[in-house]
Length: 216
Length: 216
DNA sequence: AGACTTTTTGTCACTCAGCGACAAATATAC
DNA sequence: GTATATTTGTCGCTGAGTGACAAAAAGTCT
Image 1: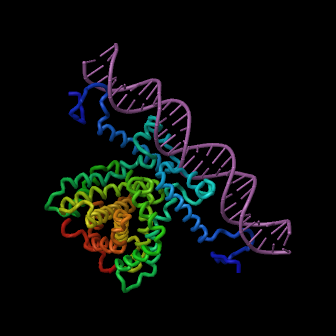
Image 2: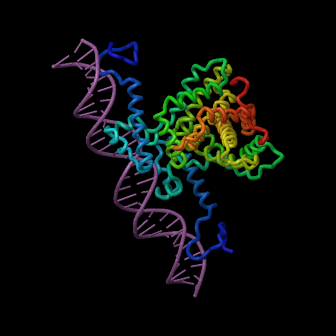
Image 3: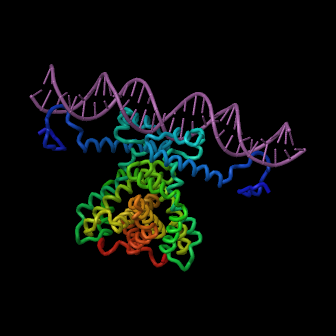
């Protein structure tokens, strides 16, 4: 059995086999790390697509086949925390509230992807001053909204496009974004910042309070 | 008195006076309308900067002086609803809850900018399929977050960067975005859609419910 | 070992976005 | 009218991103 990670039923078995999703993902991750390295060193605008490609020894044309723009090269790093959570939404136990579930997912992620964590923190910080990176960051979270909506609709027995579902998905999602930004801001070299799980809990608690007594 | 809309104290009175903010705003609005016209007609990617500039009889160079990218040309139209609300936040009466205040602001806006409304609806719809426009749309709302945070912090007597303030500002803001998207989706030629004020109220009610009984 | 087939990568040429520099036009005060 | 400051246009450039096609890679089959 010649390791086919995509066991499609109609394998002609003829010619070069398509690149596995796993391998594609690895290449994308390598590009992402090269991009963030150059972005932090020279700044985003001063970094060209050629720079990123040359850093990896690939041609610029291939780079654009993996990512549609130089800013989007770092997308895999920015999605880091979120796609762990959205993946875990599929196994959301029925005896756990969503905040509890998300909090644990966030905590797990924090430990798991330690090497990428520093890059992610750097990127979220750059998000403030670099419009191109901010666009990617906001879009990453916007994409997650859909996933949250489906999970919530499924649990609540409502349609995924019900207003209450969409608003809840959006609010939860945006709370996670604010928590991540806070985490990035507070995490310094002295590592005195709060944990990601604590921040997620705190942010979701605010959401759970509704608009609060102050704004009403 | 030679109409100076920026009555700066140190008017040398010598040379051509700077363009008033009002006049700049008018030019930007003209560009925005030309852009959305071409975007809807030919699609975003098929519309070049030269097209937009030529539509108005200005040079391409001047176009880029008013906007940093062709997608951002429509920004004035996308901010339409939001900047009315953020402007009114300055005169937020103390006997009104934030939802009530926003609801009324949204309703007023709906009537006031009737001509721009159709373009805005078209744009928000295009936001789904055009990544460039979506980026502008998301960034517009992201910018509003800051304004909401300041208003809420001021009312609550908290620091603008307090976690609770930021989360509340973000959640309210995102609820407005979902309401606007819903409005754009539901508003057809037969005009059977709900009113903007109703949608804002409904969305903010969901926020005020917190995470709700379902997700906990 | 071939020959064969399919995917991936690289090379080339091209369009368009967007900016810096400088000239030309415009609008005011004197 | 002249002088001055602002705006606009022209020119030329770099870089993003794409389509077309050739070269290389990685397999299968005999």
